[in-house]
Length: 438
Image (cartoon, rainbow, N blue to C red):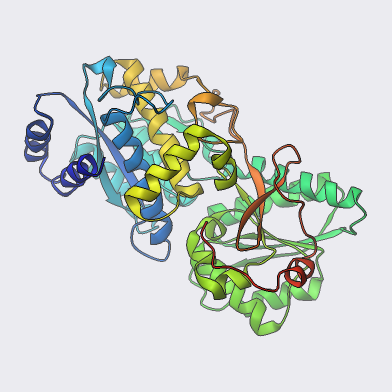
C-alpha cells in the first residue's frame, strides 16, 4: 500500500506537467490505462493547515483504495485495481492549496480544471471557500463534490454541478438541541443559550441556524457574539458571553480560534455549564493534542459526522481507520473521513458514468445511491442526493471529551457514555486525564 501511495505522491509532485505525470503513471502501472484527474482543494497552509492536510490525506486514502486491490475491504471499487467501468483507469488526484482564502479557492479551481485537466473537484473545508470554488466550477460545468463544509446555504444556490455528501449545520444543530431536550427532561435547568462565532459564512449561518432552533425549542438567546477571523484575543468576546450567563454556549470556531477560546476561559476563570462546538476546531486533533490541551477540553461537547467509537464497531470502518493510521501516522478524524467519503462517492459516479466527461459524471452523481453498508460513516443512512445536491442520508452524533478521548453521548441508541452536564461535573470526576489519542 505504501508503494502505491508513494507513486500517487509522485503524480502530485509532477501535476504541473501533465504529460510527464501521465507517462510516469503508465510506467508505474505497466499499462497505458487512462488517468481520471480529480482536483482536491484544501487549506494546507495558514491557520487551518492541520485540518486541510488531514482532509487531503483522507482523499488520498480513497484514491489508494480505488487504484489498489483490497478484496477483503467491503467498499465499492475496492476489490479490483482502478475503475472497471473505464477499463481499469486510475484515479489521479491533483492538489491545490486554498490557504483558507475564498478568492484563492476560486482561482485554484480554475487552474485545476484549465491547467491540470481535472474533470471534477472536491474540497474545500471552509464554507466560504467552497462557495467561491464551486461557483467557479459551475461556470466551467465541472462537478464539485463537497464533503467537509457545513454551511446550509451551500445547497440553496440552485447549482447543477454542486453535491454535498456531508450534513449541514441544520442537521448538526438538531442533534445538539435533541440532546438539550433530553437534559431538560432529566431536570437540568436550561432556558438561555449563548452563541460565539467567527464572522464568516460558516459562523454567521451556523449562528442563524442556532437562533432558529433555539426559538423552536423555547429557549432565549442571551448573547450572540461574532469575532473577526483574524482576532488574536477572544477575552473581550468571552466577557460578553459571561455577562449574559448562558446555560449552554454554542461555538463556531476554527482551530486557532478554538484554542484562543480555551485561553480566554482560563484567563477569565470562567466556564459556562456546557460548551457545544459545531466541528471546526473541535474536530481537529490539535484541539486536544497533549496533556495540557486535553485537560482544558474536558467536558466539552462537539457534533461530528464521523466517530472513532462508531468506526470501532464496524469492521469496514475500523479497517479503513487502521489503514489511515498506518499510512499517515495519525488517527482518522471527521475531516479525513468526510473527504474520504466524498472522493469514494465521486469515484463511484465516474465509474458508473463509464466516462471522464464532466457532464456524464454530473448525471451519474445525480443518480448515485450508496447504502449504509458501502460507507464508513456510522451514523449515516446512505448517500443519495436530492435536487439541491444535498445527501439526504447524512447524519451526525454528539460526542463529549471524557477520560482523554471523544465519547458518543447522543443519540441514546448509539452512545457509549451518558453525557456529563455541567462541565464542572466532568472535571470533578476526572482526577487524571490521559493524553488524547483520538
